[in-house]
Length: 454
Image 1 (tube, rainbow, N blue to C red):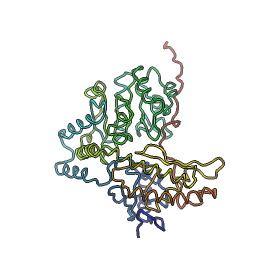
Image 2: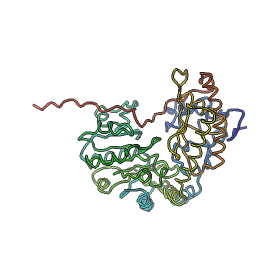
Image 3: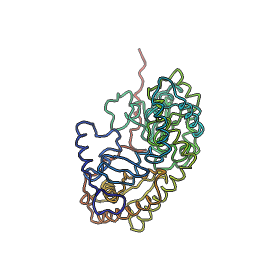
Image 4: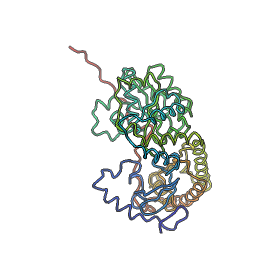
């Protein structure tokens, strides 16, 4: 029998997942279209690989095993799987068409709704993915300022201007790499060290798991005002989660441009570029940013329904409330069991569980995380280290999850005390996640002295 959330004697059977993975091995490079969903982030040999369906906060894999899901599509499912109001809006629009030869009224209606919700959203444009709109924002900043270099902090997508500063930069020309610099979150001195007279934009995730300290975001705002730099917030995670109006509302700091995707349409592909009219107006004639599917109506219908539901049901408060129960409950368990090497941090709406291997330990935090994932899977919890909360996560989900955490932490503590966590692993160790907010990318190169032309 397939496993369900709760106490199970056996690990889930994943035969059909494994068969599909074998078929994908030489057909789909890296197996996956989304890195965080791929087999490297799930213990191979133990974890499910392919999903069949979802409902509310639960996911079923292709072998029929049921899980309480805390990945939630890697963030987009703010309301939950198959949420009736959103799905009904999609079905209604489907009867009228998907993509048209003319613009659709939903483009205007959704833009007006975004303007009501998002601070400083004087103008709005649509696209399909987060890296679409962050790249458009950078291009706009360069056009608006007449300057070239970009300072970034966080993860901003696969496009050349950003990915060139990571360790996966093959195919990116040096001239492109040398135009993007980096800084560390909450380290204002690192910003000052990187900024120069040719800086067009400072773009960052306003928060991931660490809260801003010492007015860090406000200092960035002041610096940009003083130096004529465009401040861009990448709100893929904070938007429509931390507050209805995102980080700008939550932290009380306005960016010149703000980019959104993920939670705005409960799983449908749409991205928002918002910001001040005097910058966004360059999209009229000067800056080219158009795509065939930017006005695709099913996603616009989903976005409208999602935003209305988020506003009417005060969803962000529910996300934080349920997330706080998990965060506090986990930390209470760790304290009760005397485990000083693990804790749940981050924000209530999106918590992260961390592990620390003591000096001289013969195991790694990644092995500890793998063992935790393995044991949670046994009890029907789909988990990648985070609590990506949705409106569908119930009190029962929280109670079952905390009970599973107790079981998993007991197994982890036994392994730690034995000094050999890897011995308890039934699958492969997780791969390092490609996502950092500081101390990851390179600092700017020292420019070579210019030689006068002869």
